[in-house]
Structures are given as C-alpha cells and as structure tokens.
Image 1 (cartoon, rainbow, N blue to C red):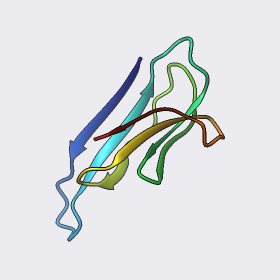
Image 2 (spheres, rainbow, N blue to C red):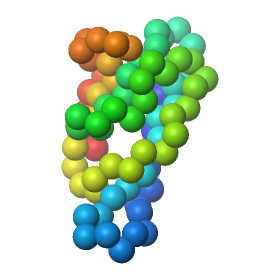
Image 3 (cartoon, one colour):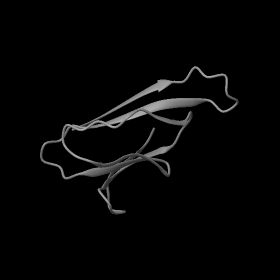
Image 4 (cartoon, helix red, strand yellow):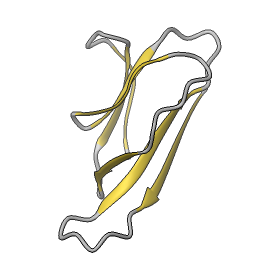
Length: 79
C-alpha cells in the first residue's frame, strides 16, 4: 500500500504549484524513491516514513515509485 497527498498552492507566483507528500505504507516492500515527472519527492523512503511536502508543478504528470537508488520502476501512473 502507498499513500500520496496533494494540495493546491495558494501562491501568487506565475507558475501554479501543488504540494505533494509521499508515505511508504507497505510493510513488505523495500525502500523506494518517489518521482513526480523527473523531480524526486522522496529518496530511499522505508516503511512508515513520510517525505516532506514538495512543491510540484500543477497539472498532469507521471508519478513513479522506483526501487531505492535504481531506475527500476515498481509502480507508475499518470496523475
């Protein structure tokens, strides 16, 4: 199981952003890296660990969960 939280930003910047947080919630899964597009949101996250909130561009992108420190993708999807 995995959990991701997202929220819209309220900044007056020209480029709208959202905030994204990853939570590793799978007891039997190894450490993972979570990427939003090419931006690393969590690196080496282990079970029960949560990332800090990351500002990411608002809009559609690909979310990938890779085995930590590798380019091996365990889960990928558009959000």
